[in-house]
Image (cartoon, rainbow, N blue to C red; front, side, top):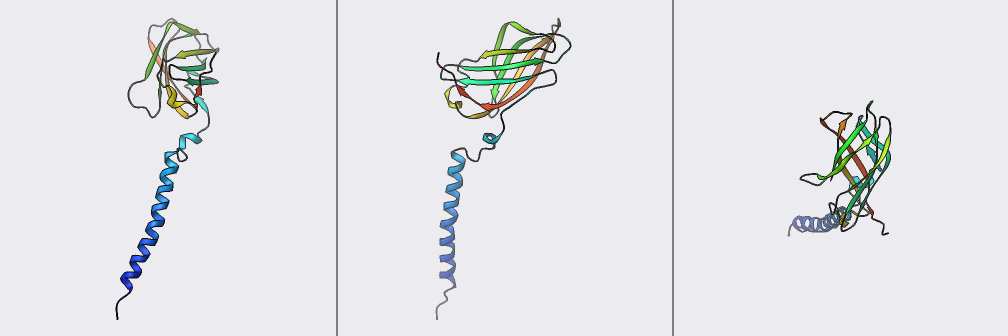
Length: 166
């Protein structure tokens, strides 16, 4: 007498609609808590240019008042380099780099590796602690006795650590 096709279709849509909604909520929760963030699975690394590269050791420390970058910089040139400034920003951050001028410059002889400590003030602060981040770093330098400023880019991937209290 009555056509039951409409009722069957409505029951099908409501049953699978709820299941679909539950799956969407689960995916949203995973994305919110960072499980689906591909950068959290990236290996810790420091990639530099052929001119100036990472010596293998680096660390980014942060707290509410300051952000520190400690990086071993290797001079791959035939002449010494003088680092004039270092600029850094988090990869997903829009806008300008946070710059630090290294007073007097730090010289690194040819083939040598030097530890460079950079203090960025409250550039990145607490919200990055224990999070794996990718930082783009520009090292401004002068080669030998040249007065021309050059730039080497270094990409740092790693977990931001809390600054140890003294």
